[in-house]
Image (cartoon, rainbow, N blue to C red; front, side, top):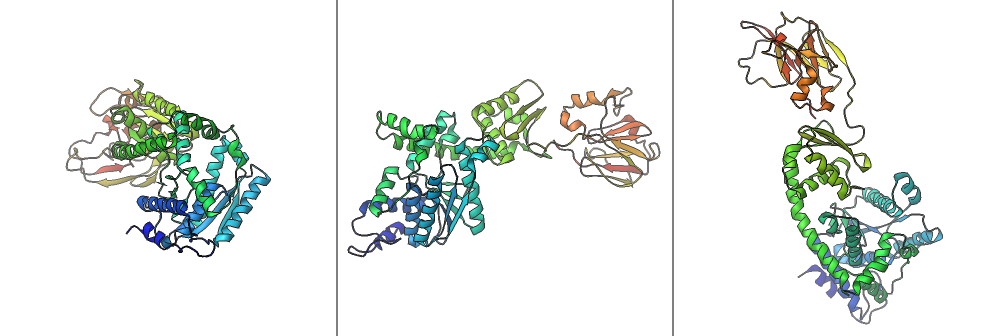
Amino acid sequence: MFWADIFLEQLLPPGKLPWIPGRFPEGLLTANSILKKVARAIERHGLFSPGDTVIVAVSGGADSVALLDMLASLERLRLKLVVVHLNHGLRGAESDGDADFTAGLALHYGLPLESGTADVREIARLGGLSLEDAGRKSRYQWFDAVAEKHRARRIALGHHADDQAETFLLRLLRGAGTTGLGGMRPLSADRYARPLLGVSRAQILDYLHKRGLSWRDDSSNADTGFLRNRIRNECIPYLATYNPAIADRLNAAAEILAADEAVLEGVTDRVFERLSLTASSGVALDLPLAAAELPGIRYRLYRRAILTLKGDLARITGSHLKQIDNLVCSARVNGVLSLPGGVTVRRSYQTLRFVMPGEEPEAGPWEIIIAGPGRYRLPCGGDLTVRLTAPPATWATVPASRAYFDPFSTPFPWTLRTFRPGDRFRPFGMSGTRKVKEFFIDNKVPATLRRRIPLLFGKGELLWIGGFRISEAARIHPGAGVVAEVDIPEITT
């Protein structure tokens, strides 16, 4: 039998004394049915397991009070609940009253309380955020910190069906695609649980009335300066004149889109893995392969790259994804784009790179002397090694990161340094010289990489463009018994 059904059969029979957490007095059929609905959602989505430590976000409002009471009532789960509250300091005495009320709730249920404060107005100013975004960011940081402290598996949030409908319209107005319109998930990031997503605000209020529970009303919910409040208080009531069940319809649409999103995310996972390149910093994609994908997949790849790079998609909109796509589909071989949050997108020949400030390697000049066989630390990272050995049995299998030189015709010391304007060399098999810069351009070497490639000189002549091409001056003549073998680290994009 479903455990929620078993639980409800164990309620106190009619006539028992007043309610205590986990027990219902006679006649609360509506409250029972709502609790049963929530219990089913918990099991269906795997939100909690018996014995879990769960952080319960409580603002003092109706939604969070109902959430706390329901979780405390589901005794068969044996949840170890911790009440968490963050005072945003935006409403003065009213905010302080919410904190005091939440402390009273924790005391009533006999639960530990973690209460904090945040100057959300200052956080918004410093971060260039709206008050709503700053508040949300502060709350989640606080919830995460408390969860870490208590080693909690889940953080329970009081979002309900009406919140989901508002979120759908809010994201639609902001130009979200199917990812955003999928709305909030019952379980996100394998941490944030929303047991009430299938319950309307009217049902929550009915539950609280039947249970005889009080709550705090947030006066800022009436402030139409916030877009969400205008959607809640003006837009949805207006849409309800066309369809009284508008909130249900919006939730159904969000659920369908969320299911589609799960399929598309699986496709994106596979394509992203196939197109990802090894990079010394940031995230790099194979540009020609990315350009060959359908637009919908390309946009998802860009989102995934940014998310992988910085951990969130804050302030990244559809217009930014379109700008990246224009860069990818452009006929230009090089280009750069700056996005909100410090993300730089750089196109360089066959590579599309996403980097954060300070991640791009420095291109400062350097020079070291190679006195003879040994190991030499390179300023660009890694080591160069030189050893005397017999010539390889076959030259065809020599990797690009290795080269051989005649130590007698090109004796030590050698010089290893970065590229300088005007550098020239005699490509192997050719009689004339050419500019190193032209070689880089012809071989589509990214500009950001050119000053990291080590150039090896002997007797004042360029012997090797490290990892790319040796010079005619480095030719080893037949019959050589000993050669100098040089290995450099692979230079990645």
